[in-house]
Image (cartoon, rainbow, N blue to C red; front, top):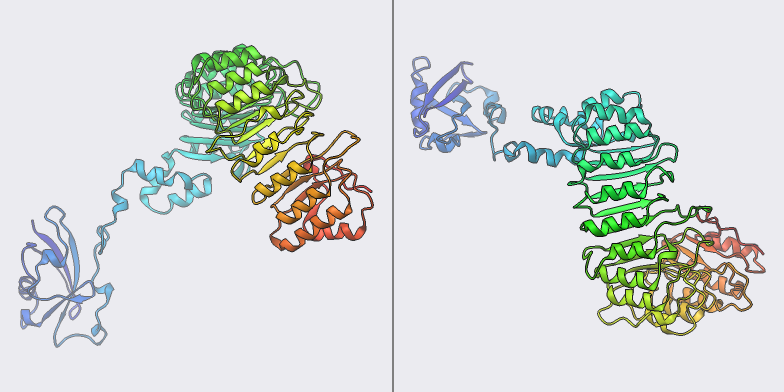
Length: 585
């Protein structure tokens, strides 16, 4: 196979095109060129320039031009004849010898050889907005062809006037893979339904969607949905019809999160019909859905999906006057079924205080041996107290040795006997919360359970536990002082005797944990002396000290100088998010 060579003669401005076998040498090329130029030109007078270098006569063309047997090339090179060389040609120039645009000099461009699917996978993180999309399309012809058909992720909140431009926007983004939107109405979803037909992830937050629009969207645009994260208003909620529309996507749906639905919109039976069609469900969260109860739990236990996270809060936490909670002890037992029924379940969050009996906790622990996080929540302080006792908590901790997060608020029957000493190697605790447990802290068993764990506790909440005193607080601070960020020992009820005093504040000053929240409200034995030790220790920590919110309402004789010292040390006595009141004299 011959190679085409285009030669530009610097001395005569002529351009010659010759064909030569790659096995020939540079000397053979010079002889062929000498016959094409005027009389008097001999091969010895010709000097060929390629790649900024003069070529030797004995070099093969296949080596010089990097020619392959199956890839013919069109090579451009320069020629200078001795005796007629112009002054500006004394030094070879790269521009005089260049490769044609079809094939660059140097190492091959392997990116051009990648398949389109792999290129689109690389581009996905970089085409989440229209601006990024158009910038990539102007980069090269290949991107101009590939980007419009890419499986992109679209965040509608980053598009100006998205609601008015909805039709044109979704026509351009007809192959959306992930759709994120906040505070939009049904018009936007109707446009997505008309143009998008294979969305895998949907994240809707506070969307004012009509039920019919949502149902049409789920049926028409999400046949292979993988993730649905939906937060609605009570006016236009997630309904049983929307749950039914998700059934065709059941074989692929792995993440389902629904927050805040009206009482009669999403029923227990409607959700139970859906979950039996979700064989690959991994994350399941229903919050503020007051009708969800035992039927949904029983359907999950029957279908047995590979759950990793489950969260069922039928009532909205923090709101009062909620309807009766439909989750009972029988529902939790029907979900647990038997030992090892959910071997991959790592996180459980339930808000049904009346259902947390010893039998329910023991069955849940046996069914989930890999459990790492368990939160047993109450809607507010007026909720029904948990009937949970020592036997249920002890069975749970024994069956689930990897627990790192443990919350159980409002268990008046719980005592120190529920916490057996951990057998090595014990898991590292991160969050522990036992509020409104009046019998907790009477002995040293609970303190030993906390202290004998590996260091790493981040948050400890023992709010309104009257028996918890300085001994437990000082031991925890000494053990976990390097990581402790939140410590709440507040007392909301008037007590005749207070067990938290200046000793706790002095321990904080000595070990200097990186606290971001400290609750000592109602601890009347904490005086100005203890606060001064705490403030002085934070002053020595310097600018690296994190901002700390402190609950302290009954410290007497608060001076202006101490208040100024608190401000200088990045300590504030007001936390609007938690409705903390300021320090009062």
